[in-house]
Structures are given as structure tokens and as C-alpha cells.
Length: 119
Image 1 (cartoon, rainbow, N blue to C red):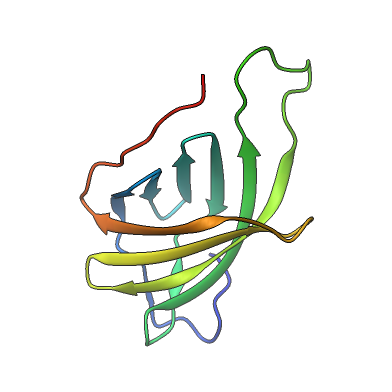
Image 2: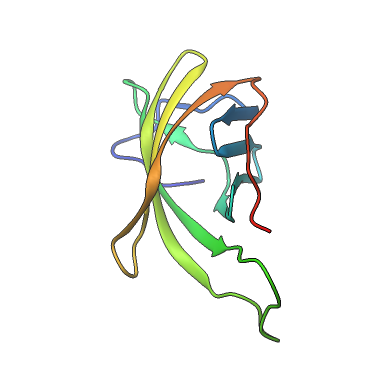
């Protein structure tokens, strides 16, 4: 499972989480995240400490409009951190190879995401 700031006390509720410009599907085997112009994967479920905080790592893939290279875009390492309180989640995502901030997002369990896909 994913790394946490301290010993895990719980895992984020499995299922669909959605917000503006982000969709997250959490399952025991993996967590899949979709953005307007990208996607990410975290191995396993997301573990939290007793205060609902989490920090984990995964890979990020930038989607771009138009043709792609034969090898496709590079998978980049990322850090996903945030807090969960009930059915609400705050998330911050940073690409760790460049310290680039992907963004801060608010998600709600069971909510449909609002994505504007790259064309």
C-alpha cells in the first residue's frame, strides 16, 4: 500500500471521488486519477493517519493534444498529499522530478468530476 506520514490508521474510502478538473477512483489494488490534461496512478489504496492526512507517491502522465511520439509521453514521479474528512478530500499534487506543482483540488465522494479534456 501507499506510504503515509505515520502508521496508517485507515484507508480512503474506495470508490469514485470527483471535483473540478479531477476524478479519482480508489480501489485496493490501485488508485487512478484523471485530470483535464493528464492522468496518474498510485499503487494500492491511499492510507491515512488518525487525522485523515496522507502522503503517497505514484506516476503522472501528461496528455497533450495532437500527435504523440512513438514512445508516448514520459511517466513522471509525483507526490500526492492531502486530508480526508468524511466525504470531502483536499489534494495537492507535485511532480517530484521537477518540484512542479500540478495543482490543489477538492473532491467529494460519489460526486461526478467536471473535466475539460485537452483536444
